[in-house]
Image 1 (cartoon, rainbow, N blue to C red):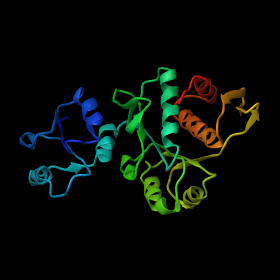
Image 2 (image 1 turned 45 degrees about the vertical axis):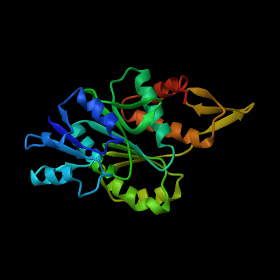
Image 3 (image 1 turned 90 degrees about the horizontal axis):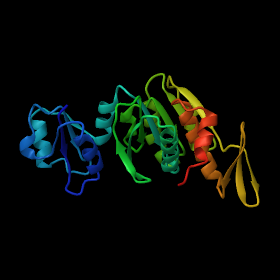
Image 4 (image 1 turned 30 degrees about the horizontal axis):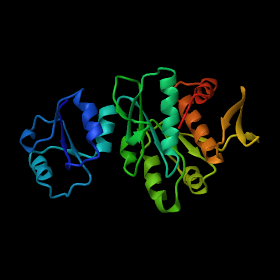
Length: 254
């Protein structure tokens, strides 16, 4: 697999390029463009008239956005995509922590670092990805949406339509706009709703009420409890059961 990147000098794609460099030939110079290139990844911030983009088009090479490239690279894997206006970073962090807590192999790529981690590609069944406005092209196998706004409803409608047929959508039913969007959707996918879990507060400390008993979480907001519930459902759908997830949460530090 030969991959060519067309990027600006200060590109945000450098972590992706660095991770791929250890796994496949990566080129970036205009003179390295040729018909032998399998994928051309174009920084979406570049002008359409950028000379390297025009050169690639003249060679008949297909230009891919970074998101579209990630789909091509991981299309034979189970793509787990976490998105939403708020909270997606914490859900991603909790899922990542749980998988690493149990030494489960996992590839991942995030738009920006989470606890110092951003890109890691290995031969694993699952790949964890951060969703953005272009995430429909990832065609998630397992997707989670934390929340939306009325203004970006169309973006998330498109995201849901991109979920693989027979895939799974986990969503926050307490978010009114999101609940309306999901319940009206007719896609052939499995839908799993979640809400803020039961909890109690004693001496200003929050205790999550689980089937295994109370889980002490310290000073935790209801929103964070919702993110924990979201992460639990994601983990359940990638091989980590509920009891094991809660055990991992005891050692989670954000």
